[in-house]
Length: 372
Image (cartoon, rainbow, N blue to C red):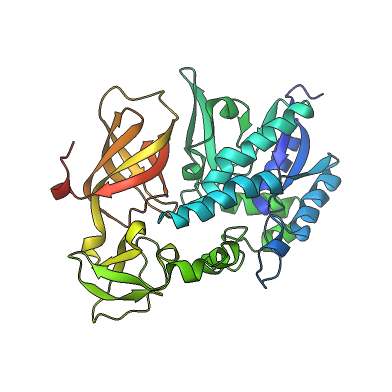
């Protein structure tokens, strides 16, 4: 075995995870490649051609890299546990009037656990992925921090990885930018990876039509929820909609209603099958509650703390004061934040470091709630 140890690398067949495996191989680790099969496209009901991390082409691309460099490659079938946990949660959240984030859930509850279990069986000291983020040990805790490439940073998606899992995690790409990754692939003759398109869709919704997915997944859903009311914040009924699960907070397009001015979904009232519409200003909130917390840099907070908080993946972040109250984080923003959607992940940063994160439970306006 290599003096640096044996590492199990999650290889999707894309350029990032492939270069991560190449880097570790060149650094002297004993590399084993692993491609996870999370979803069967034939089960999606979509007519779109199979692409992305679960496709046969992607599995073959990952295997070819391993063959070229002379290290083993395996396929790990986690379709059953992925479906039971991630897809069921995705469906259930929409039926609760919330907006889920399945990719974060998959990272934190499925992929890392599945990799570590297989790593133990294969005698691997570490696992590695191609995420653009960094991990380090500090004061006895493992800290996730932003990647060097601000445009590709994926630290937001990793807040839920446990301390135990982070202790065995290597993130080779954290200090690099995408342009450098492309150059490395070209230098090593993997030009096909450079020209390969990247998918940003949810893997089990390949046509990006989550409404159609829900209709296929839940028998009779359309009939059960059709005919709900569009209302304004004062309760004025302004129209009917197709059913509350088919709308998300912040949505503007596809509402099928014209009021003479731009309107957005500002709230979903599941129990009444109501979708509340409002102006862009009415979409803004001053704070929120976040639960199901997992702390990163600190085990917990004994007092209020200034942070930058993200409420969605592509959010630049907003200055916020956070306070740890029992099992919930109370967050107050210095300025209003638009489209805070219950069900999405909220991640708290101190500089580049992830303090922790959780799932957005609810939001509020300052006038409706005492501030911190």
